[in-house]
Image 1: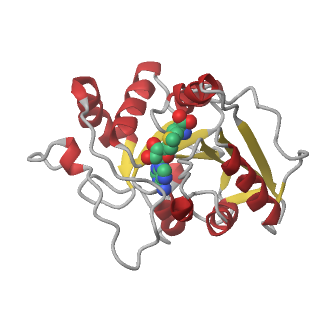
Image 2: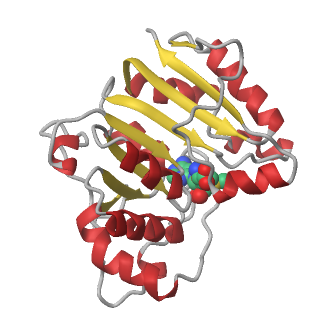
Length: 250
Ligand SMILES: C[S@@+](CC[C@H](N)C(=O)[O-])C[C@H]1O[C@@H](n2cnc3c(N)ncnc32)[C@H](O)[C@@H]1O
């Protein structure tokens, strides 16, 4: 991180430039506090990378310019991509319970990155890396085809207003992109507490030519997906969660 900048300045997002794909997140500035500032300063250089900013550190790449997950994690293991990991509590819990797979969490919001780094360090996890930036940009430019074991998209921003629906991450073109990076037999797992978005998830998955939903509609809630504070707020407000799980079959 450039020494003369605060983390909030060093990690800021450039405005969405003309011609760039529309973003599925809303860049927000947020206070970090001492624990999270320290996590960023001390842990990001070792456990994190930036999707787009060389000053913060880009990920290791293979000779063909793609993400080198073996160099990133220091071993060969199935890789789970977690898109929009939020505060990271679900990622850290799942990675701790699943030491045979490597978890790459991508988040645009800085406090979430810092919080996950601190959780990973506190728990001594070796199978988590944290990327700051736009997950779709990372997947498009850097993730090899057929390379991922699973993609998790838990509680993506619902963008409830009709004029914002174009920002939803679970949409046909994004899902086709994500599916192309899954290995055959790999899974796309989405969850939401926003009922209309859950229906859209089912529809998009059903319409994708390479994905198969083995369940009759929504999947039973998988035990491995922890309840986050975010999900709990939805439950408290009377919004039950729905899981949509599909397998790449073509
Ligand atoms: C509503 S939160 C849910 C967080 C977490 N998955 C959970 O279940 O608590 C959605 C998160 O996705 C992030 N996000 C949305 N689009 C993203 C993208 N394209 N790349 C990285 N993060 C993204 C947002 O910054 C936000 O933190």
